[in-house]
Amino acid sequence: MKKIILTLVSLSFFIAVQAQKALPEIKASTIMSASAFVQGQEYPLTITVKSLTAPITLAWSVEGYGDGTFEMSEKAMQSGTTLFLGQPGTGATKLADNETYCLISKAAFKSLTDTKTFTYNGIKFKVASDTTPMKYGGKEADIVKVASEDSKMQLWILNNPNLPFIVQTAGLPIDILINDIK
Image (tube, rainbow, N blue to C red; front, side, top):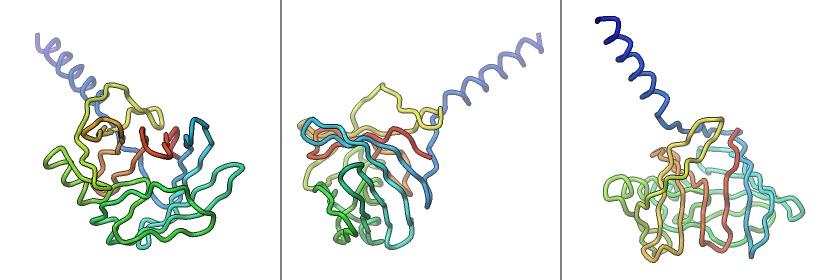
């Protein structure tokens, strides 16, 4: 009888460990292969994390278009309220102290965690249900899906208070989908 109980407990523990979602590690030199969708066209996009200390720097490259960087201040990372939505110019783009690119601020993420809502670009987003798993490195990623109140815009955000990275968007002028994180 003890063997059966021990086996059941072990099996339950194994299933629980397997069911846990993972957070892909994003650090300096992390490379993300992505797709950018602009006016119905898909373009291969590469995003490389150059620095996670001020200024937070993300390099981007679109085959056939060019490359550049986005630089975000520490203030933007802490309390930004605006997502950069424009088409990037080649070279370095320094964002304002309230702007972020490919992520939301820590304050917005805290609001999301505490109240299940946050406001960005003057638009209120709330947690939305999503049963479609996203996998990176063969593991299901821990992601929170949010949608605008009218459901026209959606963001899929890594459930990471230190780096709430956006891995997919829908309904924005330029939508992205992160396909792989290395």
